[in-house]
Length: 94
Length: 111
Length: 142
Image (cartoon, rainbow over the protein chains, first blue to last red):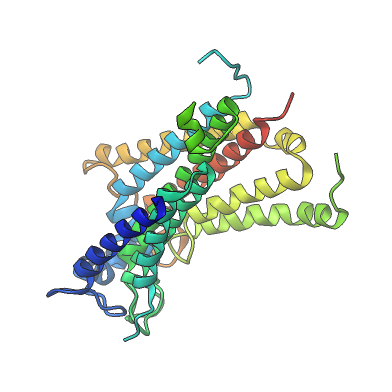
């Protein structure tokens, strides 16, 4: 019963995903991206940042705020594991 | 134009991940399904920037046809988040097993 | 405790410094070749994890103490934010590039990108090693 319900939900979800992505005026075609922002990055990335690896140029220069957020998430999750798995944990003391 | 490519495989695997989260009772299997969903999103976005006959996004000698570097840079963040989410979920599963000596969600609700 | 195979032990001990060196190479050349901070950091951390699995965690913890690794992780987070504020001090916005740039194609060519790669790399490597220590030491009786 549970699985049948899940499969029905997934079929509805798949229908909407396929309809949204692969039909309409600007639908996706595999192998032919329509880069609007990244064209700028590719053209002027080396001159502006000085890095040959354009992925790193975007990752650490154009979108360094994303990297800061990722570093904070990594730090907080590592602190969470650190706090959850303390060695001196005793039951009853939170 | 073939049907089987990175975009459709990514969509199918994210549906598999959602199915696993909806139906599985084991906490560790649920964490595994979370990671499957993360990997499928990565596959989808990397194939979004694919261009047939293009090189990797590293400038070596002048102008060459390159794949889209923007989704790759975004997915680098996503890989890190998937790693730490998995480790945090497993740590929570260890903790829950220590407290209740089960990781079956149905039995955890009954308690 | 069951003894591990001698071949695995010796080869891991011989290969361990080269793994660390390869991780440092990936981190420091992240803006010129494939690789980057996170990838090199993961190699750095998995070398420590491999040593811990092969040699035993107690021996590994004597060499790479958990307090030291945790301190490096925290220091990396602080350094990232300090580098970001350097952009403001130089008169521009947060996390903007404020270091002088060298010739394109050499290691100091990208300004602050090298420093950010270093902080992220060491943060990720030591963070993964610390998480591994915590997970493997949790159930054991001391």
